[in-house]
Image (tube, rainbow, N blue to C red; front, side, top):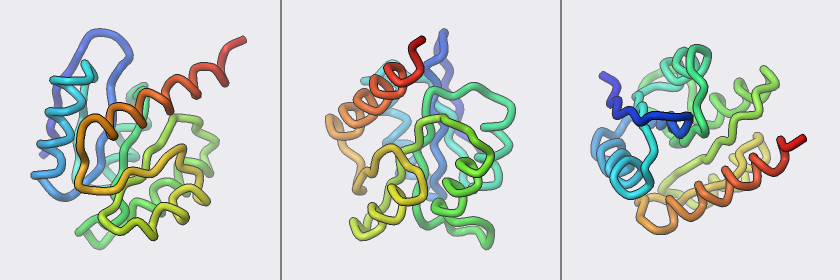
Length: 136
């Protein structure tokens, strides 16, 4: 079941992680401290469906997802193969996944457990860079 907390404007973040505790913590940080809307889903496949139908400011995706479908890395590769330029932040409890995520097209990597300020600081940097790249 998705966690959805909306805001006005185009500051919604798509979070993909099968761990409900991570989704809850990240949702609280993003919504309460960052002022972002949040849509948290458990699978990469659901993430692709939500991404196709909504204009998210960014996506945060875990490397390992418990379902037997796509991994977070495969999600990133699929999104980048569709020429989507939405900023994507990969996350994992294993820092060795950072290189794979960046090579696949992620804009940044977050090491779990997620904490504020690193989560909000990295997200702000990625969104600022993305905005600057799309001016003009």
